[in-house]
Image (cartoon, rainbow, N blue to C red; front, side):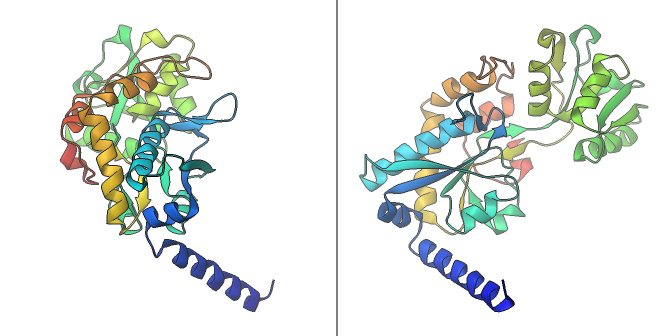
Length: 300
């Protein structure tokens, strides 16, 4: 392809995208008769594929309620919804160019991303915690004093642990593992007493282990809550009003309790693992006072 052809193709794509988005998402969806949902293939339990290769998950259930709200808003009970697989790299571009209308997964809502996209009400809060064997009775950061702890190399988690270790003079011996699997194995085999990582990842590792009942995730968090949100296009207040209202209704009606329990405290397909991750106090507070803030301090 020549440079001229590439340029023409780029301009044509940009023009099509601009034209498709000029009228706003509700108008776009009304004209097409279809709303397109971006899904992930392996973001358990938020958005992933079941044994029939169909998208399922906590975020997918929430997005199904949002699609229902769009049907009501547009007075189109027969509005079709279709799925479009996305990845960490493609989710924002495919939303921005109009390929998808909602991104339903485990995407962190932060200020940097808000320069490109918008978010509806926060649907999950994760934090940096540690996992240890119940028998060791380790539940707070102070319990780790003088002990050997592991985290994954190159993560913000090990950075936060290192900073807290120095600031609080804990004397923790910090080991760096090459990946999450190695770190978890080090605790299983006794080379470390605890593994520091995002709590949802720890819950998934414990649930998939040979003896899920032996594990406990700390009540202490080493970071402020990190909000996950469903992405929508930026500067589309009419669409955001509809999706925000749908999310608030899920929370205020109490339906969130059933949906949350289905994915975080019950066996989930396809393997029937149970994450055993009850709602935290900060998430319960969010369901009472729904917000879409990217500021972790807003969820304390």
